[in-house]
Length: 232
Image (cartoon, rainbow, N blue to C red):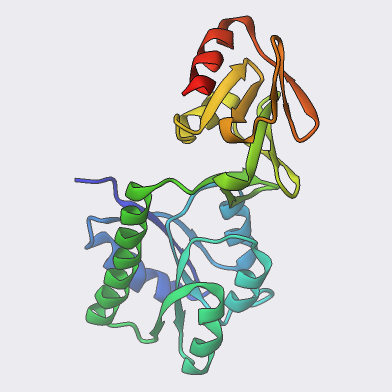
């Protein structure tokens, strides 16, 4: 059995937490990893943790559910919980996959969860065909980096600078961790501090390569492999 999907509840009503937590416990495909009672708590948790599914209340003090979705640059798949159906249409602009009207009944909960897994299965099938992006934490939030836009990655302590066609991102990931996420046929480590997109190399010299006017060193232990890879 695959690992359960990590989900969180964000709602200011304890009764809603009780109902949803009970429903989630009955589904072995879901794992409840966090319960927050306002938008601030949710933001803090999402900055530091990966989440697959968020059950989000719309009407909360300080920051509403809709405001939270607007503030967070990338957020997990979301199922809204609300007593007011008029928010449903707007919510789909923010990637919400379903909404549950309170009081929430178990059959309707199961239908929403099934819709979530349908989107996950479709995503998995796409990833089997090709890995098109990687998810990394930038400025405290997870975001997707399109691989066809990635030129090279540069080690920066416990972080990595991701140089793309448009801009540079400082990602909270090590070079070794990043290397495991990248498709081997398209990317290669050429130095202890650099990973490059092979098809983005403009010039190759004995001790360095050039990508978009950036001169990147080739480590002595990587020279033969790089030469062989570029001949293919």
